[in-house]
Amino acid sequence: MDFASIILTIAGLTLFEIVSSVDNAIINAQVLSTMGAKARAWFLFWGLLFAVVVVRGLLPWLIVFVSSPALGPLGALTATFSNDPAIHEIIERSAPILMIGGGIFLVFLFLHWLFLEDKDYGLPTERFFHEQGVWFFAIVSVVLATVVWAALKIDPFMAFGAVVGSSAFFIVHGFKENAEAQEKKLIGGHLSDLSKIFYLEIIDATFSIDGVLGAFAFTLSVPLILLGNGIGAVVLRQVTMGNIERIKKYVFLKNGAMYSIFVLGLVMLASAFGVHVPAWLSPLATFGIVGYFFLQSRNHCPAAA
Image (cartoon, rainbow, N blue to C red; front, side):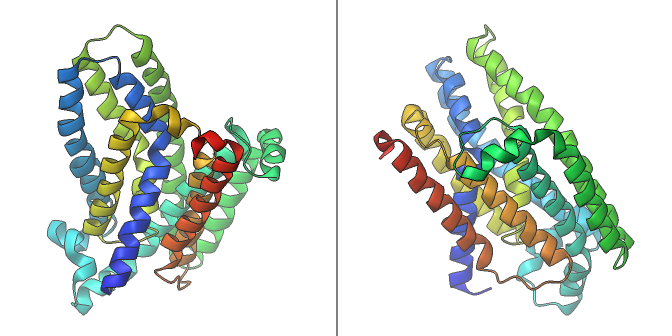
C-alpha cells in the first residue's frame, strides 16, 4: 500500500467513524452535561483513551486474530505490512470468512434502518420502504439464504461466516436497544457520576461495533483502523461537546452513514466472493455519500450552515 492510499484510507476511516457515531456522541454529550466538571474531565481523557485504544484498537485486532489464528497475536497486528508469502496466503485464505460475516452484518444493519427505524427522509424512496417494514425479516432471511447458498459452493467456512454475521447483528441489535434505553435514563436519572461514566463506556463500546466492522471494508490493517477510527472518535467527541444543537441540525447525516454502511457491506460481500475492489472505492464512496447528505442537511436547514 503506497503513501497516498494510506492517507486516503485513514481519511475515509475517520469520516466514517464520525458519521456512524454522531447520534451516540450527541447523547453522550447530553449525559456529560448532567455531570460534575471533574467527572467530565476524567471521561474526556480516560474514557476517550479507553474508547480509542481498547474498543477501536483491541476489537479489530481480536477479530483479525480469531479469523486468522495462524497469524499469531503479533502477526494479526502487522500482517498487512508483511512481505512474507506465507502470511499473505493465510490472509487470502481467511479474509473471505471475515468479509462475508462483516458484509452480512452491515447489509442487515442498513436494511433494518431502511425498513424499521424512524428517520428524516433524505430520499423520496425512504418513506416507501419505511411503510413496508413488515417485510424486513422476510428480506433479510432471503438475503442470508442466498449468500449462504452461494458460499457453500466455495467454502463451508464462508457460509458459516455469513451465519455468524447474521447472528452477530441480531445479538448486537438487542444490546443496542437496551443501551438506547439506558442512555435516556442517564440524562434524567439520579445516578452517581461514576455510574454514568461506567454506563457511557459500555454503551460506547456497543455502538462502536458498526464502525469497527465497516472499517474492514477499507483495510484489514489493524494499525490503520486504530489510527483512522481513533482520530474520528477524538474529533467527534471534542466537536459534540460544545456544538450539540448545531450538529443536530444536520438531520441527514445518519442517512449518509447508513447508505455508506450499505455500500461498505456490498464491498465486503463482493471481496468475499473474489471480486477485486479497488482500495480507493470505499473511502471515495464514503466521502461522496456523506458529502451529498451533508449538503442535503444544509439545504434543508440553512441555520446548519
